[in-house]
Structures are given as structure tokens and as C-alpha cells.
Image (cartoon, rainbow, N blue to C red; front, top):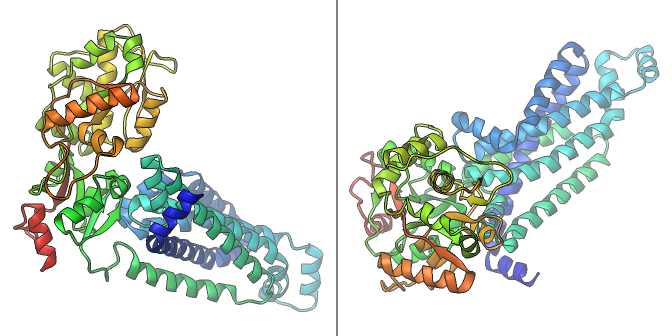
Length: 520
């Protein structure tokens, strides 16, 4: 708990900002869902033929996985708060509509007949008899929707919507339990708080619930428009980054300090950073120098003229115990050594990321062209070697190539465990024997795993590619009993990337020039 307390003290202002964003996203979606769901549910009690179809449609939406629903919405809403609020609204709608119908229809028929016998109209029976009796069931639906919405709202961080999910996904990427708790505990507390508030409203019969919800929705949406990362009134320069990059030793804080870069980081999943840039929702992104989207979208990579980033040469990182048990692995994986340069890797990435070609097909075609035709697959749940990867296209491709080479040049069977999250998750999986090999980068090993001190005066522990490789090879063998096999030939360096569309940054070619332009 001391680590959590220290983290909260060090990130207090940011934590409050993320909590407020989470609250606004949740309240906006719930208010809209209740404002629409309550009248819709009441109307459906008088139109039973449509009720089955409406509830069925809402039920189908409820079964769609949260991430998939966000993915479906992005082409229509863009990224940021909009898809998050719409997804939460759709998830909250079913319990509210269903409980409204069930609550009203559970009113005893004798009571309704007595009210009608007293001369009440159908509308009076609904408002004075059925609705008050159904209130506990209706509120149960709203409270259920609240708990669901608070939990699902954590996914807003993946699409630039902010909220407490920012800490959760940073923590997952870095295998940092403290950071995960810093997002999860406030989210749980927020859920309990909102449930308690609704409980107090429930105990106040006659409260004007629908007008209050409509007002809450309008206020929340107005706040979203002004305060979210993509709000129109946000005047600061916005730079899209992956969650892991914010907290890495070689990440955003050091980059900002080196260049004096005054920008607002907007955290996004790697697959969305370029979409945000192309749609003008951010002004620059931190990407990888071999990303296929750079050429596909005609983007410009700014030169790291103050040499902040170290060399990030790709190489297989293998458990030494696995190499001792299966020495033939060394020869198999070394077949790929120095076969891939930056242009080739970028072209392969573009085929997967931009042209939507299958990873296995692209990997196989490259190996065939390189004179390394893969043999038949021997993959299954029980395997001699497990190949892992991080969750982006280049890692999927390299993992597939590793698996093909192992099956072709050894008699070993392989299982792929790809998309394991950030650097620390892959490394911990390797250390614990959950995987046997994965593609890693020398600069990442130097800073993110070995924890080498970053320099801010232009002198690095090592800027020479061979020196960095020799250092991580030696230290990983000594500290972790892991071995770096020969490099694959390309460096996938972090890079600052901007649009090449003749805008205000049309003359900017280096990170220093970008910093100077922002200072004007």
C-alpha cells in the first residue's frame, strides 16, 4: 500500500483529471440512456408487438464484446470521447428498458382494474399507479447499468477518451500492479458512489428523474466537448502516444525534457495513433520508424537531432534454459540474422497494417523470397517451444517467422502466444518460462528492462548500435539467464511523426524545429 500511496501523491493532479473524465463519460452515457430508455420502456408496455424486437436488438448489442463495439463505432464517430459515450449508452440501454417494461407489467392487474374503474385514463393509470409501483424495479435497472458503465468506461482510454483506464492500460503494458490499482480502485469507488447516490434518489418518491437526467446529460456532454483530449476548445499542441510510452524511462518525460517540447500527450492504442493523426485529432504522434502507415499515409518522420533515442535493433530474445534443452534453436533462429532492413520491414508491416493481408501469408512469402521456404506446421496446444510477441503488426510478423523457422529447421513443435501486452509483460512471461522466445529491441532492453539511466546532456551510456547490443547481451545473460541471438538487421526506433500535408508544420524537419515552432 505504501507504493500505491506514493504513486497517488506523485500523480495526484493527473489522477483527479482522469477520475473527472471517467465520471463525465459515465454520467453522460447513463443520463442519455435513462432519458431515452425510460420513455421507450413505458411506450413499449403499450406496444407489446414491438417490445420483443426492441429488447432483442438491445440484447444483441449487449453480447458484442466491448472492444469490438468500440472498433465498430470508430469509423462513424472517430476517436476520443464520442465512441466511448455511444458504446456506454448502448450497453446501459438494455437493463433500463427491460426493467421498465418488467416493472410496469408486474403491477397487479386487480390494482389497474380498480384504477380504471375509478375513471382514470390509461395515461393516469400509468403515471399514478403503475409507475410508482414499478419504481424499485426501474431503479434496479438503472443501478445495474451504472455498474456496467463504470467498468466499461475504462476502455475509453484505448480510443483517446481518457478516464481511469489510462492507468490500468499503462499498468498492464508495464506489468505494474501499483499503476493498475491506481486506476481500478477509484473506478470501483466511483461505482459504489454512483450506486449510493441513485439509492438516495430512489428513496425520494416523486423526484423529477427524467428532467434531471436530461440536464445531467447536457451538462456532461458540454463538459466533454470542452475538456476531453479532442475537444474543440483545446488549444494546446496534442501528441498521440501509446500508454507504455508515457511511463517508460526512454519515454515521453525524457523526450519532452530533452527538446523542451510543450505538448499535451493523448494516450491511444498503437493501432489508432495514425488514425488520430490523419483525422487531425492530434498534431503529431510517437510511432515506430518501421510502421507501414508512415508511407501509406504520406507522413513525415522528424529527425532525432539531439539523439534522445538509443538504437533499437531487433533480435530474438531467448531463455538460456530453452537453448540448453534445444541447442538446435540457435541455428534455426539465426537463419533470419541480418535478413531484414528497415525498408523491407516497413513494407511487410504496411501489407499487414494497411493492406489487411494475413500475417502468416506475409511472413511465409518473405521467407520464401529469402530462400528460407517454411515446412509444414506442427502447432498445437502442447508444444516444445512457445513463441511470444507484443501486440502490434511487426511483432506478429516476427513471431510467425520465428515459428516457421523453428518448425522448418528443427523437429520441435511450436505454439504462438502473441499480443501479450507491453514490454514488461513479454519479459516477465519469458522470465517465468511461460514463453521461450520473443522479438525484442536492444534500446528497449537497455532502458525499459535493465533500467539504464537516461542522459540529458547528449552523452548516453551507449549510442553505438554494436555497443548497445554487446551490453544488453552481457547483462541479460548475467542477470536473467537469457540470451540475445544475432540481430535481424533493422532498427525500429521510436520517432516523432507529423502530417506531410502542407500545414503549419510543413517546414519542420527535426524534433528541435518542432519544439521551436511550438514556442512561437
